[in-house]
Amino acid sequence: MKKLALTIALLLGTPALAEDISIATGKLGGGYDAAANSLQQRLEQRGFDVEIDNYAGSDEITLALCSGDANLGIAQIDAVDARASEGCNLKPVGVYGEEIAVILFPPKSRLDELDDITADHAVLVDTIGSGTDLFWHTIVRIETGDDGNKSAWSKVRPVNEPVDLAETLASFGEIDAVMMVRTPKSPDIENLLKRGWTLGELHDKDLDDYKFGDASLYEGRKITLKGSYRKQKGYGYTVRSFYLVTSDLAADRKAFSTIAGAAR
Image 1 (tube, rainbow, N blue to C red):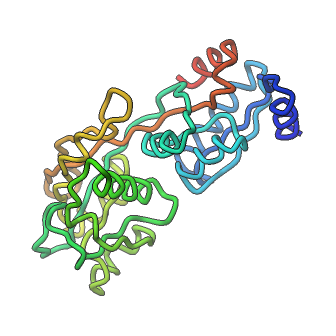
Image 2 (tube, helix red, strand yellow):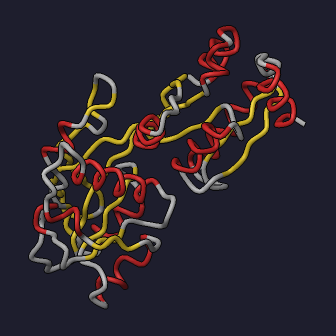
Image 3 (cartoon, rainbow, N blue to C red):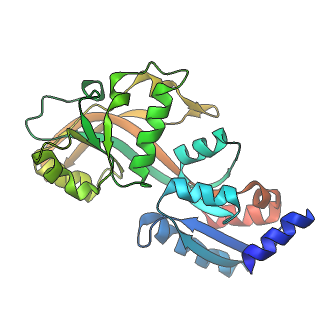
């Protein structure tokens, strides 16, 4: 009924009911999903009628927002950039948080930075629809675009498999590195570092120079990781995520303000 009401409202040229909120979020049980459930409770306390729909990742979440299947979501900034390039501008209403994009190399690998990999190599980039997969496709788009210099790493063969298989795939010679977008203390990162993998240098000037609005899409940073393994230093990028609303919902200033307060 909510989607029907939204469709009728759009056809009539009138705004959709502000009380009806559909949140597009990530996989069931993930960080985005937990945040969406918490936000749902806060919004319902403020009088909104809220439903949650789960998607594979930020790309699908923003596509749902742009298609009208949802009007509030949580997604990475690179997905917002991708939709903007297609003519759909989503409005940030709150900051969800930050993750880091890193590259790791197997034990005894002679490779230690992004520029070492070429078309002869394969890199694990997590499952299709994941934040890492989105990051990979975004940086390749930047590097092979008009302002990129088409570095050899952009021709690497991406492998879409769960990162749990990284060690097995490396042992079989099927991958030469793994790329991940995670929190610094992610078990996925820590488990590989404990088993002798090396934190590498994920850096390219074209990525540094690429802007979204007036700021860098990804902020390059030195990274130091220390856990139950030897301290490792490398380089990677900050990947920000935001609470987002559609332009229709943003136009309702009262609803927008209330959602902004609930998303803090």
